[in-house]
Length: 274
Ligand code: HPA
Image 1: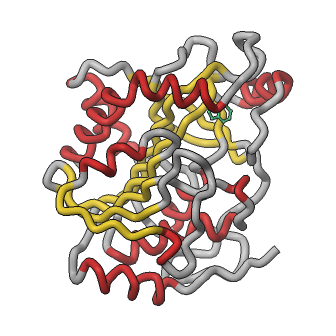
Image 2: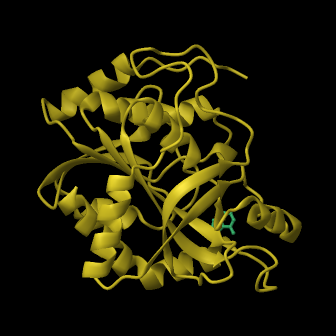
């Protein structure tokens, strides 16, 4: 496995050539079916991931794979429209690379969203969960390899990967917009397979409320670089074995369609108040 992380210099040069001295303050990474929010950015500059040196590109249907820079709710933002997953075959270090580029552009806050399966039987498809903490069930780490001291220390603390102040803003906006929000622990599995019912039982036993195939690499890289992080899971389905139904990606996308408006309203409210 390669542990060499691309240098951000070339990526920054390509992006800067298109945005001049525009400085994003908030970075957003949008998960399955949530990329629509990026279409609402004002005065957007859109750069396909494939044109940015070192950026992994998405291969999953429904993931657009481009960086969108502009304003949202009056804030300068940089959005990854369509994230790349570990199961697509990229080393985990490369999944963290765009986070470092966004931090270098000026963003010191990150909102990361994902689709997840509910382990907590009190959740229902269509619900939203603020991520309080995560469990790395991949046993890989995006920070393995030489440490780049320009971003952060060799042994980063992870006692508050997700920033309490941002969680509070999310809950305030949920209340204001009348969107109920759970709070809980997200467990990342490598994918691309969904978990077995036995694994879901293990996840519950370990304290997880939701399971998914993303987010942890980006959140960890952002935390290492001193960024504030907010994670929000959209519950697309009950995790394997809970409802007895077989899981399909189509079901997740269908559920997302039903709740995308409330999801977008929530993220907009959070961005406005960050
Ligand atoms: N497991 C893992 N990832 C997911 C799920 C799930 O049940 N639903 C959406 N993404």
